[in-house]
Amino acid sequence: MIKKTLISGALGGALIVSGTGAHGVPQAHARAARHYNIVLIAGIASDPFYITMGHGATAEAGKDGASVQFTGSSTDFSPPTQLPYLNAAISQKPDLILIAPTDKIALQAPIQRAVSAGIPVILVDTTLNNPGIAITSVSSDNVLGGQRVADALAAAVGKKGKVAVVSVKPGISTTDQRVEGFNAQLKKYPNMTSIGVTFATDSPTRATAVFKGLAAANPDLVGVFATNTNTGNGVAAGARESGLSGKLKLVEFDAEPAEVQALKQGTITALVSQDPYSIGQLAVRYGVQYLNGNHTIAKHYGTGEAIITKANVNSPSVARYLYSQ
Ligand code: T6T
Image (cartoon, rainbow, N blue to C red; front, side):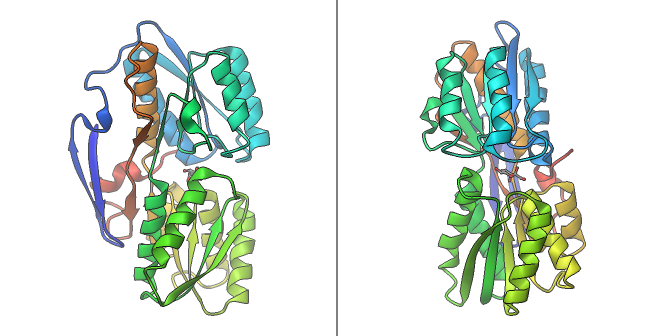
């Protein structure tokens, strides 16, 4: 599917209209003038979001006569664990680097080193404070995603009460933008208040502890927004272990298998999921186009988001928004 318009309501289904030629994507595949070696450096390589992105990138590379090496730390989403993979890629001198920077400031200079070494870079998912050093970036609209979470949570709690946010750490563009969108949209609900953001460093165990602490300290808490997969899995476990599953409403970002299972079981009310397959696919497609000498590329390409609930989780219209492993 190339052209895609997604219309989604607060807790409603998602309608995807397909055709060809959206995102300014070249209609025919940009076949490589020669074989291109592309390195994809994930935020965290064990995360189904990036694994699915890797599948999209690899599939596209196969069509374009290129190859993708999928790398990244399998333990942590952090600059110190990501940097060795970036440094290794720079010394390997691939034709193109696709990278999800784990911090918008800390990765700026290291990515500039790749660019200065003559390796074009495309930012995938997360971005930098100055993304202009990359030839383009491909991502979801994370501010809009955060707004959708606020609407879904408001609908789930009857538009009133105290809610909390559990996120990863400050400085990650995606999760920061989701919180920004969420907070802005929450202002539209005068009877709702947020007690703010607590960070759990992408650790499910810490997110469980954070959830339990928040629930214990705030018996009137009615809902929680968990801003990504690992955080969401920890929060959902916390709700189950505290006997609050289904009672305290959870709306989470992403749709990896454990989150989808928790949605089906009623622990999670709604997921705002992304399209990582298309992120990988488009990044390779534009990268190969660039390497072939066509530099008429936009500075950013957006992929869609979907709201997934029990009502539409088995619908073919949201299938591409469910992550694989
Ligand atoms: O939510 C995704 C990604 O968009 C974010 O940048 C980091 O966390 C995930 O990988 C999911 O765990």
